[in-house]
Image (cartoon, rainbow, N blue to C red):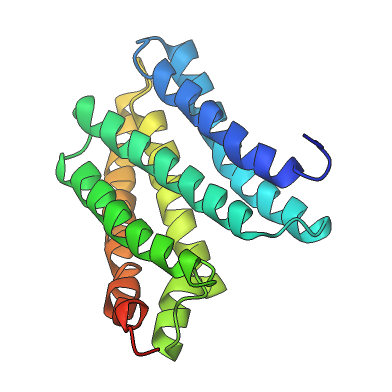
Length: 202
């Protein structure tokens, strides 16, 4: 495999393993492990921007790249929600919503791919394009999600001063709710517009 020609895809895949290392450290109840978990979480989410930059800079944008990018997002998001729920930091409703939404939207988008559409290109309405593909919606969702994950880990660092931990925990939970609401809202256009994919007359 030509590494240079596939650098964006390599980054997309590598960040999944960085995220796995991050959540794995959460089961080691020490300050050092949690601090590294925070650092690796930041790196994993930063790599999401890096793969997009590499794809644009070196002309590596492709359907495979789009699928790997979304796959990475889904896996990373799901493992954080699942682990946070397992550790008792959040309700189980968060991973349930996340996983259900992923199965629904990604199965629909897989059909769109067979019809020559990109995962985000299947949206044909102005409101659908805005909610799913606009820079504002994507950035706001990403920031809320990343901030929630990082702050929740930080707030639960063993031995952290309660005067710092408690406000951080409240902030993390608020951001988690904002992120999960965005998760639901951004799935609505995908479901609403999927009918055309099954219209045999077209």
